[in-house]
Length: 185
Length: 185
DNA sequence: CCTTGACGGTACCAACAGTCTCGACTAATT
DNA sequence: AATTAGTCGAGACTGTTGGTACCGTCAAGG
Image (cartoon, rainbow over the protein chains, first blue to last red):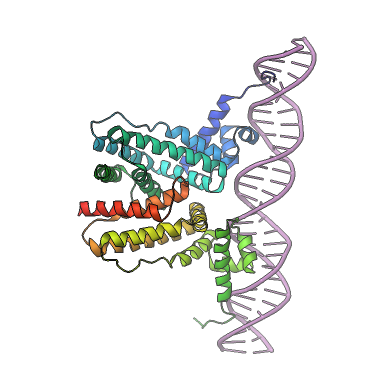
């Protein structure tokens, strides 16, 4: 096993590809691989050298962006923490660009197994964040169902589009879930 | 406006098309238009004469099948009715064929506006059924969020696949939602 | 028997995911 | 400095699919 030789991976290209992907998603334009490559000023092969499929690119782009939404500092109570986290999540996910992006991601995941795997990872990460918020106050409660209720309502509304995904909805749901968790402990 | 002349619509062809669509979905095979037409022994044009897009066909096929799942007779309590309905829904939706079908439908809806409209109608119908169950016992409660919690968990788990969608999960969720509704009334 | 319109079948088109090849470039090894 | 390995952007190419156009045929009303 000899050391690496040859030209190294261009990180600017990587960043440009991910940025192009999120830009297209957010703009509502069709996210084709040609469009990503064109906008990133990159050859298609450069994309396929590093990602197994188009869906994987899109999901990685999205995942990077979502890292910004982390649980905030404690507010002093389960109710407060939960409300802050869930409301922030709903408010962020409810913006038109973000909604379009999340829909696009599900579409990718449903026809590409690589993308599905990354989506599973992404959602697991999100659930874990919420679980941590709950566990801080109620370490012994089984919160799996409660967590699924929160993200279930979020994704369901995003996909179907029949009801609002916003700050207010998030607050209402958080209060409901908090009461449910307290009753179950 | 003259009366209708010419050959009439062949209802066998319509049925064959819808059956072929559900068969393919259930079998997990790729649901392409050519495959539907081939399996139904039908020309592609015959499909496009009656449906605006592939997604519309698939969704109509699915909707017809889902009509079978209706709310059952009352068991004597909110808790009982809710548990019966939700558990039956989860049990039905959790079977591998049905899960595959539902995923396929979302995939169609995400890239075809006709399909999206039909999916919106379909899910609205499902919510209405659940709402009726609740309203029978708690006519004055605002059940919108509770309904979304039920179907949210269902769809979320179906799409991500991280947790079971079965009888047991349905029962647990139904009990939780029933308690929540009682507390809120 | 003639017109109307649906039928099955198939050739066709455009868009797209993914592969392959090309000459140019860059970094480690010799 | 020369060699070698591996990346780069670019674009041609393949295969599949959704959707359209056209064919000759079949059924029903006038």
